[in-house]
Length: 298
Image 1 (cartoon, rainbow, N blue to C red):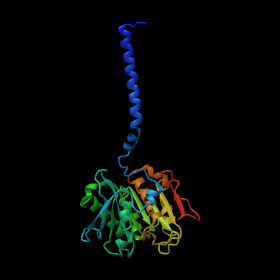
Image 2: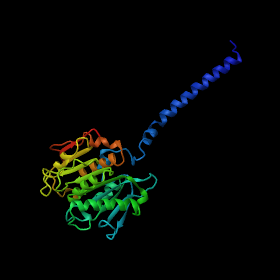
Image 3: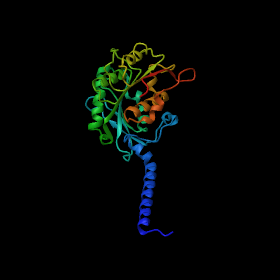
């Protein structure tokens, strides 16, 4: 049967519309993963696995810079940072040692965290005898230096900052985030402070305790700190099995993997890491974790 020119043109238009719809659907399917990644511009690094967060180094090559002890507000230290500028800026973390501790006692965390996609400053304090509230002020001074005048300031997103600290540095971390709620994440490690009620803290906080801590016993420090947090705070408590107060002073895979996960989740808002925090590590005979509590789901 022979069709009129108008009928042929109608069929051509319908065919064209269907073809356009097919292309649009195809583009939509292809663009899906890219669009999902674009939902969070702060994602850094490949999809995480247990192996990747337990590794001694992450996917980023890193460099380091010394910070002079003559810097204002704290005792100097070392900056560890990803060498690439291709991925944009990074979140930043400052880490304080504990009472009588030097920067060396927490330096292992610098390259381990930086290679996962953070700028990290392992700081020295003005005095090894500084108390927690003094360390809190020094932690804030170190953050200000890092974001304002350090040689890597242009690599840092000043809106994505975190603090960590051991012992009195952990107590200082709690005080600092209590004073500055804009800080995105806090990780006190076997923390010590005379203050026990931290219900006014609004920064997502992961506390590490140690089963055999005889200096800042978890029953009188880490656990009461955690229990004092507001019920709506995003929080977690991890007690290291068989560990002492000084567990954070040497390379520790459990501390590293959950610190990485916490920082990724709350500094980078990277929900790919929620899987390691919720429901969290198993406990028992074959675990390095004695106890884990959290406010999951995050």
